[in-house]
Amino acid sequence: MLGYNHNEAAAMNHILRTLNRSLVVIALFFSGLALASHHEQSEAEKNLVQVAANNNDFQTLVMAIKAADLIGTLEGKGPFTLLAPTDDAFAKLPEGTLAELLKPENKEKLQAVLTYHVLPGAISSEDVAKLKLPETVQGGTVAIETDDDGKVTINGASVILADVPASNGVIHIIDTVLIPEEKE
Image (cartoon, rainbow, N blue to C red; front, side, top):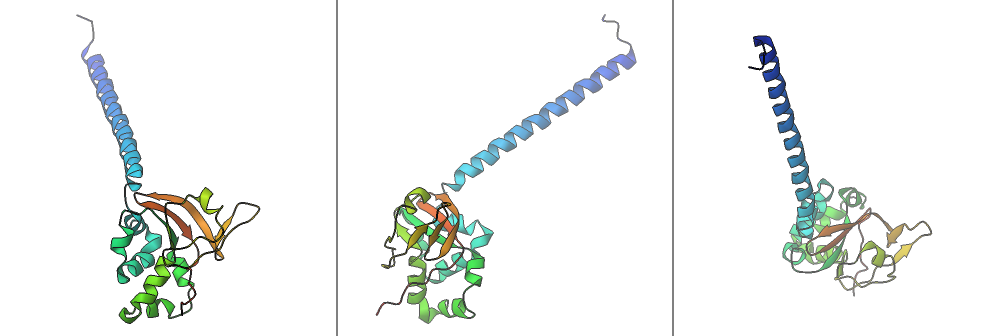
């Protein structure tokens, strides 16, 4: 016999239970980290529309993509570079502009505006900064400028976050909606 009295045995049992609980908490913590890491990796497995739909800053963009019947295109194989205006960017449009674009009779105009935000190919921020007048899926060109501090603007819109990965391309978040020149 080890010579433990009843109080010492109870204390030892308490210590062992506490240690077991601590080990369970530590195991849950690390499994949570593994799940979070897996979740981050799975974001790159989502297509452009899914990535935008999972971000609260792009509800207007996603609504417009649906209204323009461009879901299938932007969920397609690609690759594409999406210059994604935030909800705040849409809010900066002149009053009534978005409502007018969302009308069913203006679907072609809306498609032109949205495809003006899409470049063919998955173009990283490093490569975008090297381009000057790339052609958009809409057919127009956008002017890309980089200042001395490395800040990139596209037709005057600032890139506020670059290189958001998607399974079928890349997203660069911009602070202004780009409006193409109307074709005659």
